Length: 269
Length: 269
Image (cartoon, rainbow over all chains, first blue to last red; front, side, top):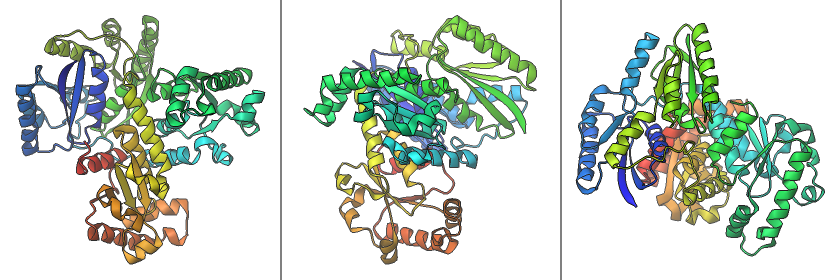
């Protein structure tokens, strides 16, 4: 596989530049991209170090390095654009256009990404993360009144990471509840959940994939056997249908996609 | 405060467009931005709905709406660019430039962001999230051999959300350990941590802010009193200095910044 080096440069964390670049580069299957983070690049000396690294890399790689930059400072951006690479200054031109349209001046303050200025949002996020942790795996059902979403599913179908993501990114209070033996057998919604039916959303997964995931954790257990996985998935889907609970298959989609689909479905976007 | 409506349009989750736009718009203090998510926009009919919404909004808002789009399809992008808004097509021109430089053709497949193609990464992430949850608040110290990072700090100084973020974004196994009474009194690193000293990183926080956070949770408790917070912070900082443990003040920075600074400091970037 061909290789390409990618530099993520920012006066703040570099997380926006990296997320953006990684996402865009999924379009290029033939290459393997090696990312390098350069956060907190706030002055000329630091930018010179980045440029040295970029230029050096351009002498050893077969193809030109790529640079994704969220630098706000125009001078630093201009210097970076002169390096031996394909440089995308993601912010500077856009800031100018927005200034014109909104008839205002940007603060041009560096390191502003993820400022905690919005303290209410910040606190909300901490609270939702704590809620997800305390309401994992059927814990704390007493606090379901507060929940925005209650995720259901067989063990290891993706409930926990989805709840954490819903908390972290969407600031939603997401609990999760594993459907286990007795409820599976009777294909019944656990009694505790009945009055929260409207907050419930189901996850399902292809039995073969579930089996593989469980095998890794508890090889050769009954729990990880294919027929057990097939049985559990059949029963959880029966429960979803019987109680009119929307659900999605998590087999081939990412935590981000699962979370976004749930939010869209439950009108939380 | 002036208001501006922002549309985030994507053939996938829209998370990249939203994160990018929000981050860029922190440059514009004078405005309050109201975001609208339009994920999974995959055909002409869906894009027409978006355009109707954008154009309608442009008739009621005082300033032009902004549109951040990560559509991959050039035709859909071109249609969107004709709406009554300032439209940023974040991907299309860049894809063309990268195609030229890398002498390759982009897949142009829609919805590729966060594909689970990289199954190893995906599993690693699930594992690190589970590790963070199981190693919260001093739990599971037996598994510290596996940890990449062990965060220390007084109660409510930001350890848990930081660990979750380190897991979710940086795929690191991050445990956290609260420094409590006896260790505080003696200004000693808990015995269990001694052999993991090199994995430890400390959080500190301004006592006044800690006091406020604790007050919200347990108003009028001894735990939330300012002098108790002052005492605890003095002692945890003494421990960090005594054992040569690096630390940062989380008072005014976001979870993303805290996490990036820790990674940089511990050479995990």
